[in-house]
Length: 377
Image (cartoon, rainbow, N blue to C red; front, side, top):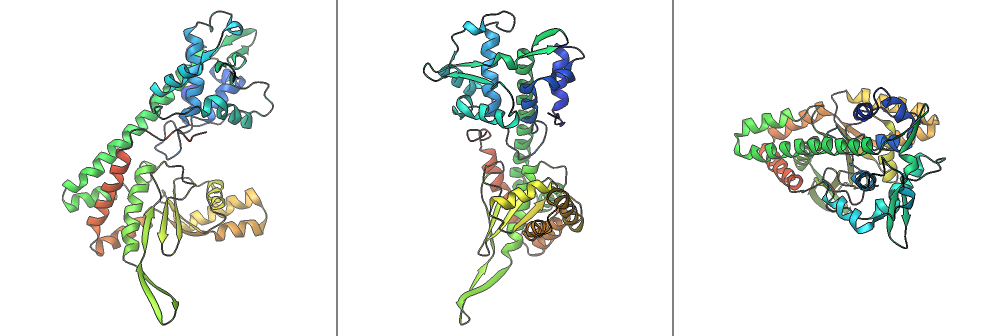
């Protein structure tokens, strides 16, 4: 399996090198468990909306911790071990950061099922479970790696890697909370200072969750000035202003739709990626219903659409399929367009409403005690 390279991969290799000097890359290439962890730690150092997958990490963590506490990494006898109790493992998971709401899914089946998706030909699954006694074991075959003529045990390094991932996610989460606090405090500033602070958040390097909150606040007020006339006959028309609704928190598992517009029924998705596969996946989730993409980039809209279409040609080749997907991209809104719309909102004298909405949405996020993890796979 080709090793996915991302920001946290270097941390994984560095930790492996600490325990096994000079062999970090080799061990990663020879360990299915480490490769799985590498795949699941992409979100470590990013201010992204991607889900943290603590459930599966913690299932591995508590079983390895149990293995280490019983010194099975330095002595034999694990095959005779009675196994860890389910209640003990679950309690330990819930003691860990962001783990308070964790359920039993990862321990019972989700981790093993997902591991199988990545390593279909593997003879091993990470968790061994006796459903009659409710006892659990980590599969030692995935912890023992042959390097040359030496058999090594990676238990300690795996625990350290997951610890490092937890710290990275906590750092990202705390930075986001600081942003939220700052946004909540803008009401106490002069309107000019608050507006300049909002402008400073319309950057490509800002946290994706902050970008979603700010873009929603701007677009909500931008569309609020627009109205449509509709009715069941030409003689009886209704007049409605456009209203933009936020569908959930910034990291909610909401099927890929971030905002919905009433009464037109437009869907909006906020993203920071330029990966065509992600765009088309979002479109597939809503049965190829048209979607407006709000993209955290300063690239020109024309370039973005051309880039998406070029990637689509490489990926799909069939012109009819490409055409269908491209038609489902109703509109692309980039950072320059958001700035233009913010300026129009200010012209409408609705800057205060933008500030109030940012404060409201930031409070929603800030009151979230921990990232939602119980539904993760």
